[in-house]
Image (cartoon, rainbow, N blue to C red; front, side, top):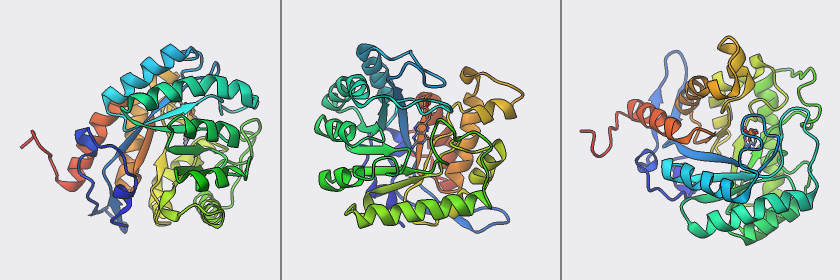
Length: 307
Ligand code: PMM
C-alpha cells in the first residue's frame, strides 16, 4: 500500500504532489484510511457536447491551449477525451473521435508538461493516442465495450483507469438501482481488475474509479463518497471524478455547471480523507490549492515555504 503514490509515476513539479509519502490518519468513528498525496487530472474535452465544457475546446488549438493552462496550474495528468459520456449521449464514430483527440494528444505529449491520459473506450483510439505519447488509458467502460482494449494496454505497458458505470451512457440514468451501491461497485471493480490482470496488465498499472454520476442517483453518489475507504481497500489507487456534476448542483439548491466548484472541492477533500489518490477536475488551480491545504492538514505537513 505504501508504494501506491510512487507507482503512479507522475511528474511531480508542483508542491501539492511533491510529498509522495503515505501516512495513516484516524477518522472519527471509523477505521483508519490512508491519506495520499493528491494527484490532479485536468479535463481536456475535445467534444461539442460534454455537459459542462462541450464545444469550448473542439478546435485543436483551443484544446492544446487549455491543456497547457491546466498543466501550468498544477495538473500532473491531462485527460483528453473526444466522446461525451453525458447521460443520453450517443456513441461517436471511431474516425471522428480520432480526428478530435489525436492532434491534441500529439502536441500536449510533445510538450511534456504533464502525463497524457486518453479518455476512450475504443482500442484504435487508445492505440493511436499511445503512439502519440499518451501513457494512461482512461476507460469509463472498464474494458466492457471493447475487451480487446485490455490487450492494447498490456502490450503498450501503460497505466489504465477502470471506471464503474451502470450499463451505457444512453440509458444509465434511467432509474438506476443497486442492492448496496458500494458493495455492488466494489464487486464490479474487483471483477474488472481480475479481468485486466488476466489479460496481462500488471496489477500495479490499474487504477479504479467508482464512476460518480454514471448510473447513480444523488444518494448513490453520496454513499460512494461516504464509504470510499471500502473501495480504497481493494488496494489500487482510486480516481474520483465529481467535478461540476449535476448532483452537486442539486444539493446546493440548483446550481448551474459553472457554479459547482465549491461542491466539487467539498467532495474532493472528503475523498482525499477517505483515501482517493487522483482527482479528475475541470478547475485545476482551485482544486490544487484546496487539496494542498487538506493534505497538509491530514498529514500535518506544511511543506517547503510554509514553515
Ligand atoms: N467523468 C466523465 C468523463 N470521464 N473518467 C473517469 N475516470 N471518471 C469520471 O468520473 C469521468 C471520466 C464525465 O465528465 P466530463 O463530461 O466533464 O468529462
